[in-house]
Amino acid sequence: MRRLPKMKMLSIWRNLRRGYAIVNRMTPTYIPLTYVTSFIKAVQPLTVLFLSAQIINELAGARDIGRITLYAALAVGLSFILSAINAVASRRITTLNSTLWARFYFFLGNRYMQLNYDQVEDAKNNEKLADIEAKANGNGLGILRLHYSLPELLQPLFELAASIVLVIGMFSSASSYEQTFITSPYATGLLVVLIFLILPFTYVIKNREDRILQQVFEENPKSNTYVHFFNEYMQVKNAAKDIRLFNQARAIEEHYRKSVGAEFWYRFFDFIGRNNALSAAIHAVLGGCVYLFIGLRALYGMYPLGSVVQYIGAVTGVVGALAKLVGVLGNFITNNQYLDLMYGYLDLPDNMRKSGGGRQIPQTALEFEFRDVSFKYPGFDDYAIERLNMKINVGQRLAVVGMNGSGKSTMIKLLCRLYDPTEGVITLNGVDIREYDYMAYMGVFGVVFQDFKLYSFSLGQNVASSESFDAKLAEECLVTAGFGEKLKDMPKGLDTFLHKDFSDDGVEISGGEAQKVALARALYKNAPFVVLDEPTAALDPIAEFEIYSRFNEIIGDKTAIFVSHRLSSCRFCHDIAVFHEGRLIQRGSHDELVTEAGGKYAELWNAQAQYYVSA
Ligand SMILES: Nc1ncnc2c1ncn2[C@@H]1O[C@H](COP(=O)(O)OP(=O)(O)OP(=O)(O)O)[C@@H](O)[C@H]1O
Image (tube, rainbow, N blue to C red; front, side, top):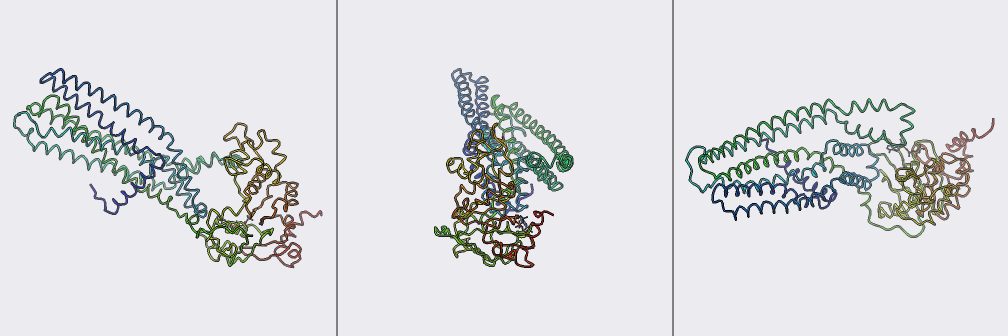
């Protein structure tokens, strides 16, 4: 057997401890219950075996009816009690197992929700997560392997201990017997050596199996990621249009067929089949040797008849338990790398949430300032924001305009601390925003992102982002956001579900209506700072006009930034910031900027205005 380096053993041990702590968190009570069931499953047959042996010995010897009755009663009584306990514990384990997948996905998803936003946007991390899920899903590797392996570890451990207890008598026979090689300690030694020779063989088989599995993954590294991606993509509602109109189904099918890697798996299972056959044959030969050895010893008068049954059962138990333990050990060794993969994901830094001196948000008026802020997206060489100096004053309505990719949304993400600047600082009332308590800082902003998401719960729950909500306030916000008329049509008012995922009478709303709900959600939060990134992009001209003409009423005394491509809608803002290639290049009122000859704003304004001027 190849010796494992000490460091690796240590890492396996640490990973196992951490893994089982996670198993315990995902499925509480599973571990103690598995101890109980594994103990019973291991010990119950051996107890019956032991008592049966006693009965046979009694029948072949003194034939004491009282003792025979006692053994029989014990066998039946113990079996009954142990089976009853096992049934109760197993029922609970089955329930836990049937919710295991949901718990596992929630565990991973919950971690995802805690990550720094930059970690979420990093493709590598998403790939890692897809890989973890796919390896768990398709191959039961990682944490799930630990979960399912627990009885495979505990049962043979108990079996081994109980079998050893039953086998001890073999070495100290009380009766007189013929002295031959078979009854000598040398024969016992030979049997023990034979048993221990089988173990490395079992380990080697297991190891080869795992190496081939590893090879399959290496030769087809993106297989799981592809399968995972396409599984999701095929069923995502907002991909359905593209799939149909661009006939993506055929391309997906081709990708799918290639990435599933059926030929690799064929090779793997072919190998496993042959391995299993070889392993079964070797164990059968060993079993034959055990029968022969104990049978001959009984013939030479070394063991009474009943003990033959007991010893054969016990030696077979020892061999079986050891082989299973070697298999589980092999499992743990292979599985270690998938645990590493999982821990790599779990240990991604979420330092933003934990950062900061815990400083509380000032209750006074809020004033933000970008001081020489530059930012590069992780893994990219170009600056998305470069040397930005910008103040946002209390009560201000600031419009941010600029061409696609000029850095407007990135500036918003930096302001909301979804990312930290690469260089420079952003301050709130003169203090670096990183010094504020992260969650409290998140509370400062009511935001409608360009790519906002609503979820398939009730309208009221969407607006409140919570299970329970203040109905009056939710309604007010929806009316303010221009959703009032639509609300009247909703069959169950605020309790109407969006989409049909969870409710048959759920409703579908248009993109513009969804944007209004998202705006209502930002207003419901009642945060002192409102950020609207393209808040009216999906609205019809009348709804847009309504929003802008009532903008002051909607925003009230809050500070507001809004990003827009429609320059006409910025006119009501007395302050407009123009971004270009990651820089703030102009700032002022519409009247000032539009007359700035050769300025970007005038260029954008004129380009847009010409479409509205009749020829
Ligand atoms: N997650 C990201 N990872 C890497 N680069 C990004 C990411 N998001 C944006 N960028 C890049 O940063 C630059 C600024 O993008 P940003 O989204 O801030 O522009 P924008 O002005 O909001 O554009 P639009 O008007 O199209 O919404 C672009 O060059 C874009 O390619």
